[in-house]
Each structure stands twice: as C-alpha cells, then as structure tokens.
Length: 325
Image (cartoon, rainbow, N blue to C red; front, side, top):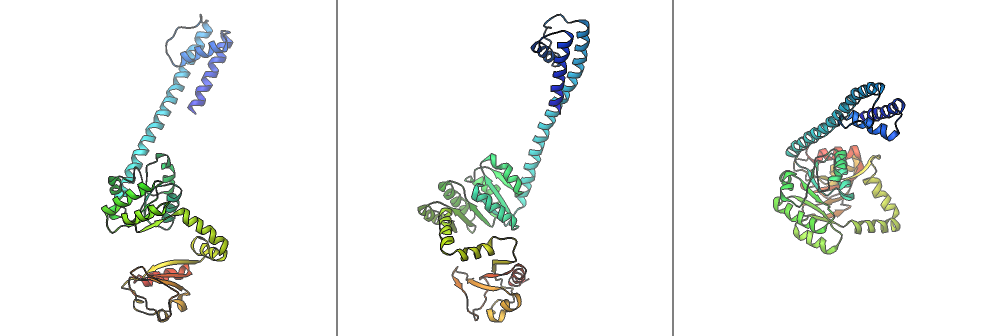
C-alpha cells in the first residue's frame, strides 16, 4: 500500500509540474523527487506562484506518504525479527522437553519422507540439517528442528540425544553418516541408529562404527522394481497393507510385555485368530531370529515381537493386551 501511494504521489507531481510549469517529464520527475524527499537541492528553473503553491502541497503529501512507507517497512522488519526470536525460543523449549524421540539428520528427499511419516504416526521427531534454505519446509511439518551441522557433538546434545529413542542419519555424504554414527554411539551406547549408504563397503564400515541397521536406497529401489516385474501381486499386497492409509487391513509389529495375560500362552489358546480376526505372520525372538508362519502350539513369550496382519481396530486391541493394558 505504501509503494502504491508513493507511485501515486510521483505521478501527481510529474503531471502537476508538466501542466503548471510546462516542464519535460524528466524535469518534472526530478523536481518531484527532490521535493518529497526534502533533500534541499535548488530548483531547476524559476517556479511560478502557482507552482510554489503546488510544491507546498506536494511536500505535505509526500512527507506523509514517505513517513508511512518507511514506518511500514520498519515495522515489517521488526516483526520479522521478533517472530524469529520468539520462534527460536519456542523451539528451544520444545527441544528441552522432548524425549523418546527420533533424531533425523538430513532433510533431503529421504529425510523429509522419514520425518513426515514418523510425525504422521505420532512419533516425536527432531530434524537436523545445515541448509538454511530448507527451514521453510521444516516449519511446514511442525516439528522441532535445528539448522546446524549434525556431525557436531554439541548439536546432537542440543537435539536431546541422551533422551532420544533412536537416530536416523541420511545426509548425502557417506563420510558424514559414518562420523555421525560414531559420535552418536559414543554419546549414547544403547541408542538405535539407522543409517543410509550407497555402497557395500560403506555399509560394512557403518555397521562396525555402531549402526544397528544400514539401508542402501538404490539397492532397495532396484530390487523393488525387479519384484514388481516378477511378483506384482505380492508387491501390490505389501503396498496394500503398509502404505494405503485409507484401508482397514494393516500389518504391524507388536511387542509382548511381561505383564500381558498372553505371556506364556500358545497361539491356539490365545484366541487371537478366533476373537480378533488377526493372523500372526511371524514371531521374532529376543535374539532377533524370525519364525515365519508359526505353528499353533508356539508359545508367546515376553520380549518377543509378533508380526500381525488384520483390521486396524483389532490390531489396537491386541496391542493393548500384549502391552499388559
């Protein structure tokens, strides 16, 4: 609005001097500019009495518009600065309170997907990325973030690594992923660390550095494309149960707590299939060994993880039972 008013005053000034004094457009523009800015330069030519009256009126109008425009710009700058300070303080408070969260290092194509999906599943997330140009995208997701280098030990501490449940490092450089993994493992020995890499050699190094899991996106993407050609129905089923948010059928992993009434009970006697219409696809024991399509006499034990397939509501009911609720 201030710019529009300023342009309007310039137009009035140019038209006025051209009409009253008969000056050229450039002379009229020059006279208008030095008048409304009150710089005090001398007049180009002798001004008539009517021109002086017009100049006085132009000074009052111009000063008002200039004051309004400068004030609006100053207000915008101050509000932006204050908003930035308040926003930073809010983020700092959130970072101090957050716990049992996942730290996502790198907000590129993979990192942004991970952060959004964790947030969509109501899992606390903190994002770390050194690119300030990505800040607007981080604000959109609505989770705490830090614009800094994730390889810095102090930044990981600021992100609450001592209270974190896990860390995901997906920065572009394998060397940085390796360094972040080593630093995080040193800061919290029992932290779950998931890292990405593009090469098999780096995968071995990351595992030796302390990563619990290492993912090679290009390998997974290639295998996925091959399986889509060879086993399209299987891939469709996996997508159906894992990615489609609008369906009732889901596949989940459910951990067995010692307080659960199903602890020590066989699958046949648990009533999971009969009462909740849930299929136990596999059981993973405490050592990480997986038993697929377990027999009906297989017993459910505390510390194991059940891979279950069924309707969402039934899975929630089973999760409550297995957690001892």
